[in-house]
Image 1 (cartoon, one colour):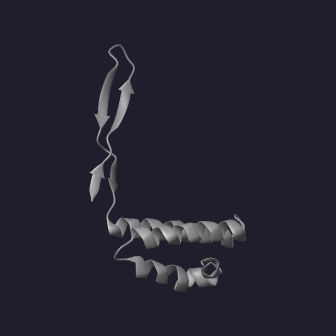
Image 2 (tube, one colour):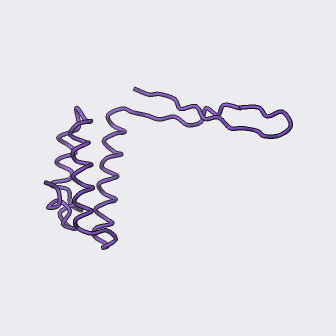
Image 3 (cartoon, rainbow, N blue to C red):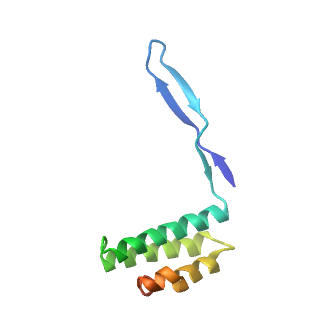
Length: 100
């Protein structure tokens, strides 16, 4: 399902006209949600591997993302769970152990 977000820019010149800008589109299909969630998980894992965030915070954030993915994704739920449990970078940096 796709929906369009319409932004309004206020031109505050002499006339004060509202002009709709139809350039911001949001996509809510399964594929986009899967890649968005894997991107979030990868970013948190990389931050954890560089000691930018603590183990406790990384674990909390990864578990929240994993919970959301299991609730929101219908068809790619198994692929996401495989990605975070068996992904090469997740095992390399120790992030797969952070997910309960």
